[in-house]
Length: 326
Image (cartoon, rainbow, N blue to C red):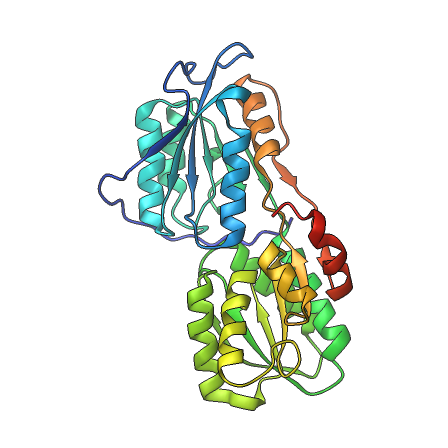
């Protein structure tokens, strides 16, 4: 994994709402947690910005169920880094057995992770990474974002790199490891081609902002745009709506390449409105729960676990959709 890590301080805000899933008590003491004890886990999720995130949250809640021996304290920070830091501090104050963190951005985590370490509460990173010292967290379970970007970029280079092609990019949340690494992998893959990047702006991984930014691209560049690369399906789907509203045909007048491979995106690909999707598997819950149990029990774990991704063209999407879990 080549996760790029950049950091800056973030301010703590006031109290935040927490919701509890699972049984309402009986957690073991921090650092304990044998098979006969309920393990209380605080999960600090980014928010609910996309179909991918919803599938990821559901996977985590299923894995960290009462039936599996967990008491899950869940918080979604609405993509506000300061609120997510406050959630982690709340978990520390509650004395949970472990904290699972899907960091919104890579920066700003040193202080609160040090607080968790001082409280003897292990932290497991999920999905995205941080730039804090590796001794401040026990393990990371996620995807190779740079490879995802590289795979998308290689397909673009192979299919359009020898013909003058104008590209626009919808970036993920600024400062997130997913956006930074996907951009790095993609840009490296298209170097030396005849592809020109007309513009690149963040759509914050949301369908609404993807549509808004794409509308701006179309107003500014119009028919000059040949190709769109979106860092996730939801932004691509928003852009698809903007392209249709402009009287153009997505997948034909403007080719679309995205990352995630959620059902809505795969459906657009099968219908010919997207042209290529690189998968980012959201079903990380089972592996994360396995790592948490080992860490709380004092067992050794790897510093990182990378979940493999696939990639799909139109025919592959048609074949995969009937059995797609997300």
